[in-house]
Image 1 (spheres, rainbow over the protein chains, first blue to last red):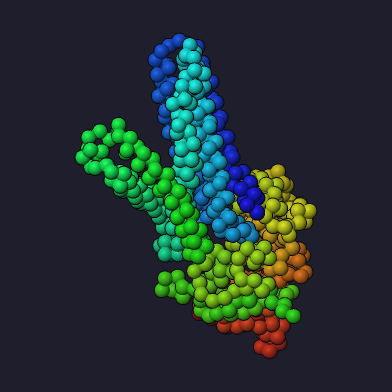
Image 2: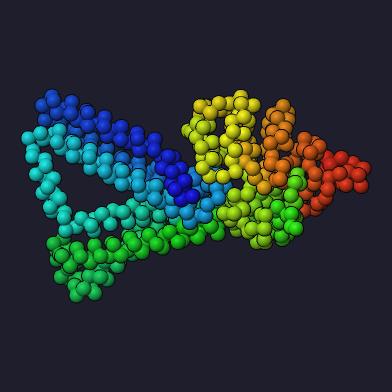
Amino acid sequence: MLGKLLKYDLQNSVKYYATMAAILVCSIIIAFLCSLTKISVLSTIVFGFSYLLTFLLVGGYFLVCFTRFYTQMCGNESYLTYMVPASIGKTVFSKLLAALLWGIVIIVMLIGFWTALVYITFPNLNLSTQIDNVLETLKPFTSFLMIMVVFLLLVSNLLIALSSAISCLPVVKNRNGGLGILIISFFVLYQLSVIVLVAVSMIMVLLSGGSFTSEFLSNPASSSLIFNSVSNAMLGCTVMYTILFYIISVHLFRKHRRI
Amino acid sequence: MNTSVLSVNNVDKNYGQRKALQGASFNVEKGQIVGLLGPNGSGKTTLIKIINNLITDYTGDIQVCGAPLGVLSKAKISYLPDTIFLRKDIKISTAFGIYRDFFIDFDIVKAQEMLTLVELTEEQRINTLSKGMKEKLQLVLAMARQASLYIFDEPIAGVDPAAREFIIETILKHYSEDGSILFATHLISDVEHFITRVLFLKEGHIILDGDSDELRENRGKSINKIFKEEFKC
């Protein structure tokens, strides 16, 4: 059943991501045509547009996740969601998995887009050497970064799931505040998560033997102690959030929903 | 042998201070066509949503074919809600595919036959259909399942008399003979001729539960007249 749910969830969003991919391909073609003109100001515009596009696509990804979660778990489509003979745990998990896979697809698409853009704009740059240099620099952190990306995508979508679950609560539905509550809950939960993350990081710095004056006030950017503590705290917190948010979301959807 | 398809015991549900259901209890036996009858706001949709796991904050006990509400009960119920729940941007063939994937009792050949009857094709997109056609499509999807219990929530409300007749004919022609039907409506005269049992729901209470033929015989009136008497303003 999980496979069928996942197939359904992936199919549900495919057209949005296909559109995003098409936009990126069109942008690359436009960037290529601009590079042929040899007008330097156009390159600046193309890069500015590409930054904007990157933000828009990341925003678009979360918007799709928001709307799909809300309509399928709390909106009209939820009739079908709850009609299907699958447990709530599997239903939420399949949506998370679909969002994670699409998130990875977006990241890969954006990496490809930027690589192509740099290659087009700076044809004389030895790109393969540059990529090798970047990969060499990132090598010690590769596994950490990959794990973090996966967990950050999961946590972001679990925050959406949890906010959706809160917006389905009977007490909220009684007041007809579903979608508004979803948005408010998302931002409140997001802020709380960041506060906890920062607090845990600070505690870890202090536990590692650091002090406020030496680590936080002097030059935090160059402090390896802060970097290690923050990275450990991020990893620990995201894993903790993933487990916690999943359990709470499933519990709320299972026991306290009203459609 | 237990032939109870649906067993509802002492179900209470409140919306804030308002009591939507109070001690609702009844059984639906195999083969019965039960009319859940009551005016607007009597609790019919709430009860149906509870049975279909859409509302979970209630008290009481409900079992479907001996199993508590959950994955097993969902597999046995074919539910037609009073709202359009299908995605608007998909084709009818995709909707069939979704049902075929999720419900093992979905008979796609039967669905295709019924689709021809309602003059739709699998290539049509749902967002190109009128509200009435979308409702018919959802009816096709619900009736193409070989379920143990079919639940219809106001399927004939807000449609013209010809469409009402078509909906009722489709339901009676295509429901699984081993199955039972729970049919919620406030349009009694349209359903009186085929329901075998009636449940009158008033302000969350089941005020009358009986065999429709016996009721007509004992009271010497039609179900419609009994309903009008019971729910006189």
